[in-house]
Amino acid sequence: MPEHTIFHIVFLSQVLLISYYFPRKIHARMKYLFDNYPPSIYPKLYPDSIESYHRARRNFRLLNALILVAGLLIVVALYVVPHDADLGNVISFGYFMLQFSPLMLLELSSFKEFKKMRKANSSTSRKANLRPRRLLDFVSPAAFGTAVFTYFAFVLAVLYIKQFNFEWFGGYWNIVGITGMNIFFAGIVVFNMYGKKLNPHQSDEDRTRQIGGTVKALVLTSIMATVFVTISVLLSAFDLREFMPVGQSVYFQVIAVISIRATMLYFQVDDVDFEVYKEQPLAT
Image 1: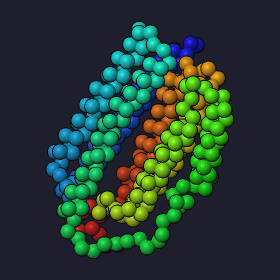
Image 2 (image 1 turned 60 degrees about the vertical axis):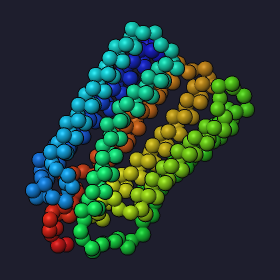
Image 3 (image 1 turned 135 degrees about the vertical axis):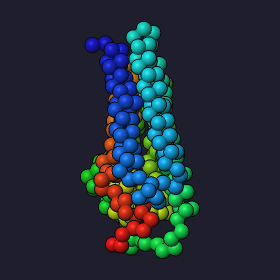
């Protein structure tokens, strides 16, 4: 099967997975939340009017539908318009950024909601979990060790490839990029573990689950990103660049599965303590 055909199939999978399957799951979860935990019973959960949340849900669904249609049109165009591996990489990357834009807008809106919650929170009492948080409380030593091993294996691969002086090879900038990514991820982990609680009403159990999901997702993302860059360098070194669009599209789908499913898996609606969002939470 020609590499172009493989890329078309894999890219179609990217379109359907990230712009159809996951948005449907997220939309259904939002609807379930609004229907089962209304503002009349859980007023602290909604710092804005319920109509604004329904409107945001509809806009999220519409935006993903438009991106889905655009992706399907791109799939059709790929069969008609001749393209090389470089164009395939650009298409896959650009469309992935477009696909994640609705999720980024949701994330930004959540920060605004938390800010309004803190502003409306009139409680003067604060509860703190005095148990110190440690990284290995949220991620297994095996997963963390794999991330460290993958990083150093990547560094060794870069040092090995550099001795051949390929014109296309970025050399030490590859190490700088991956190192910068890991430092950024580490900053997010530290902020989540030790920073100020964004949601003033969130219970300690819910926050612990949220931190666990975030840490696990970032560790897995670090591993996958490092492996992907390593494979990309090796494909280029062995003159197999035509397969890079396939690998990139697969990588984006894996990242989506890790990030989105981690949030949904470790923050199940039925496991959340919604009592804290009532006007007078039940005493514990």
